[in-house]
Image (spheres, rainbow over the protein chains, first blue to last red):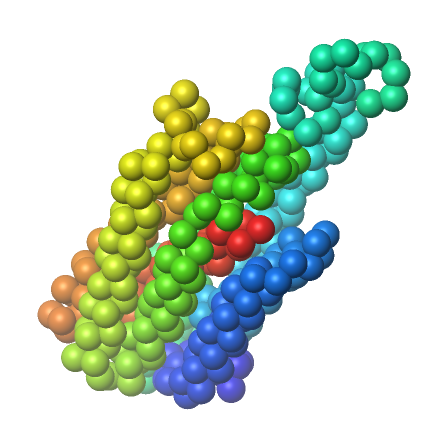
Length: 122
Length: 222
């Protein structure tokens, strides 16, 4: 079913079952992420929320946007864009995490508070 | 090459009226159009990527403010908006599906429903913005929300308004595209052999949904 697209236009009219399945997965995941947010999973809440978002995104990309049955260049285009965004975020966060405390904005998480020795342990 | 061109001319032997002269057949033309759209979507991902980066950076700087502020967003509204957008993504694919089956009126109806859901999303978000404005939950020096006084709270709202604002602008443009598609579809411009504009408009609409899939947990839930 998934590969019909490549056989030309006549075969485009594949069944809408995949769309229904995708929609149900998206709806279920939305309820799931909302319910998970009501509970306190501590450090894991963020990872859980992002994992569910990733699953939803994959379903939208593969089936609603048809990357499942489209040629490679389209997939490559999206993959490279996402890769560069991840690079941007990772490198920026690495900078923020390894900065000298005095270089952090006042009042921020790792900034020095008045009265601390700037050269001691942060 | 010539054999291939004949094979894909929808079996009529004649060139499709919508086929541009520099493409050998409709399939190649659609592949080119889709690749062009994906390149555009890649730039959109990069555009939002900058804001996602700003979000991550300020979140590591002000984790307490992020937690406190996200608990003051309208979570239930966010949930309804998420359902609204995923349902609209579904009606969008169904519009293309019915167009390919030759059911023009049903396809137009689904396009209109999709656009209406886009406008519903904007109304809901407008209501949220209005409440945040009344509470003083605003970016930068305009911030005077008394319930959250953590350092960096104005930064949360700066990021919140930028991200949701840029996303809402996309919803507005997308809804405009959908209305245009519905108009031309009603006039009978698209059918199973030529649905490229609807295909590309659909990709844009799904991207809008895709961005929201990440915005919802990042801003409302964590």
